[in-house]
Image (cartoon, rainbow, N blue to C red; front, side):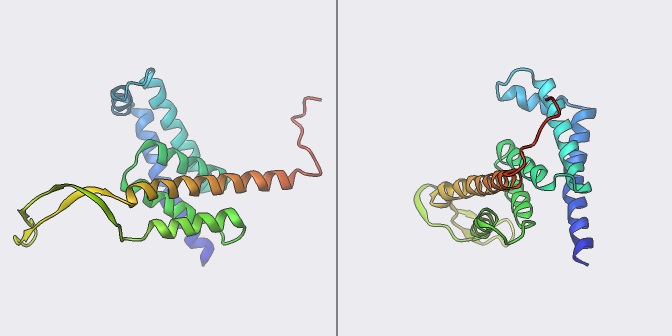
Length: 186
């Protein structure tokens, strides 16, 4: 049953990447427009490259080919591409697929749970508004400003990526300690 649920989760998660990547490959104009807006040259080529990456990495996760590497690359791609809430949701999903084994995955999973905490401590208020709730019509006073979470959350996301990446490197080094891999060039 767990294997079926894991496969369903992989298909659903990867489907979003594959569809998004396919859309970039079919019509890269919107992505190229955003890349150009950031002042980065060769926007159309980068849009095609992003689309190809999303399709290939998404399919790798679905079929189970180098799943850990593919999910790490997708997580890094998400973190560098967009700081929105969906990025954190996808990252948490990818991290929580890791087994509770080894220092890197345990550290990443703990950071993922810390990212799920709702509480935050304000440092300073920049703007306070007096308005009515759109839902109930009652008066509300939302305040906007800086909070501890604005500084802690990006650090936790970076720590997740580093913990899993370093754990992957340690696993590769341990696996090839006695037998060095050759490229067949000798």
